[in-house]
Length: 329
Image (tube, rainbow, N blue to C red):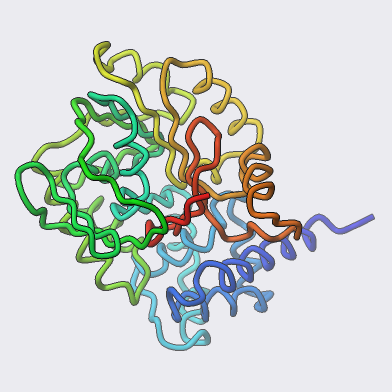
């Protein structure tokens, strides 16, 4: 009979190794080195597996350590600090959520939103602080083609490469709301600091973009409610009836177990709404099968680390996880 504890350690090691190779590589040298080191360090793995499974996420553990002042030099220096300060890191990881709120994802959402008859009412699940509810307040650069809000250039410019025609107009958005297990308030110093900590160490431009986007949201806060993704119907009931309701899920459903994801998909498909999904490409079998059919991808791991934009579970594009590119199918 297999040892459950050994199996748990092995699964966590594989998680950190995959994170290092498929997510951090090319994006953060610090996170690649740290997560790769964790994958080979039985002492640190044993500590991390004390956490509930979904709170062992590399992003969450690394961010909590940084929030508490962990050194980011060598792996040996960081891991020594982590072992010494583990009770404090564990306490933070047990109450924090990975709520990365990347406004640049709006560059991927915008073309899909511009194609929907408006006016639009946006409802985002797992919204964090609601930064992705403001696609009409940011400026865009699609391979040199600029698009600005109706009142002029924004303080936030989102650059995105694409193999298709960029949108020529901004969507008309008349209502914006979101739900989250722990909604963040950009005007709260602790919430703002956590959002900044979730940005990877070397990504200074991304951190400046976050700060500018938080200023935009602070000037006109959205309606945010505490609740899980399956509370979407309660919030949808408050949307204006003369607007097209668009439900957005952006990098959040991966944190749910399969039954919860399926329940959410069933709920949204039963609503009078358009569902824009910006999630891991292999998360839903129907989406993954559609991408494989179009691209002729046969390898089981062909979609690992890749994200997809889907409209009502019909895949439209492979996209950068932070909105860097749109590769239309």
